[in-house]
Length: 498
Image (tube, rainbow, N blue to C red; front, side):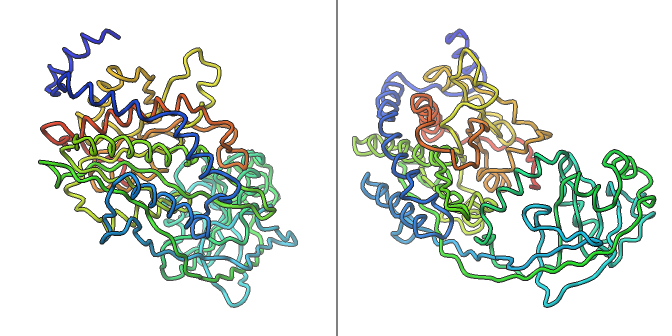
């Protein structure tokens, strides 16, 4: 692309361009972000010694202190009454006994089914298992679900609202198919099995009697003694044609407190210091499997975490040289993303700085690899960007200006769609800023064979490419932190529910 045309376009759009002196400073400190530094820190954070940095584990606390010490060393402030740690109040819910029997078929937990609901029962319950199929008013009028376990077909759609609708109709519990193909289900069941016994981490809340069992399409067909294709057809208009079955189920739950924390380093700005730029990642991962295999989490999200530290160091170096940003910057490494975006939710509910003063969130989650889409491409210098034009008309323009001026990456927006079936927008920590109408840009390298596997290791990271991505985020953050006017919030958040 012709740079002079881009500059002309930027001025026509009212984006103030930096002076040559400002550009020179930007380049100087951006160049301190290096593949060598990124590799050194990631080699430690994603080492076997860190045992997967599971939320609430001793290794997660070691990682938190490592980051806090780093921020202190480079001269950033601890904004939590002098501390770099914001304690996040979590609990772990484990289900010691989850059983499901349909007819004479006794199903095996994390093999034949995965328990995704909630509940705590002193003794086993008996109920009819009826087939509802698609959740619609028409089907609910045909099938009596009150007091029953209800089989629903929810392939390719959001299931949370459907579960609520069926439970509100009086169901005792749900058996759900949310994907076709045994292989797809087996991958999920395998992950649940590998993490068995560790408990589900979240915020404390009353127990909800909501037994929900996820099964494969093949298993649902087996339970109702009906071929898959016949079951799919019945799901649409005549679910009452499928014969009900007798079922028995039980759930036992145990709650324990979990100690974890968000980590943050703060750089105070100058004349616009009350306004805040947040640069975030999640620093913990999922720990060790039940068989002792370590989920190192090098890409997810060790890559984002060390990118935040390198960007922080670049800004800190500039500040020591007397070049501080006009707006303040919070470097935020959150906990519990893998458990449901918990740390970022806690921060947005208990902000250290007023959310109304937060100008933007740049979130970095997986920036160290090349995904399926680009693995055979001639040019692999890319990054996916999600959310950048939803709430502010200027953010995407600022990002693209800095990219063409300094980085020349392919900015790929294919996943930045309201109907993206992967739902990546909803799956990382920027979501908890955007829901408060704070402009966001989420930087992401897409998925690969090692995503959420024990094979997500440091030796597979593309450090030179990771350096380019981190430098682009630095340049964009520098621009937003120093421009005269804060980014306008002139868009509409049309993605409010996860």
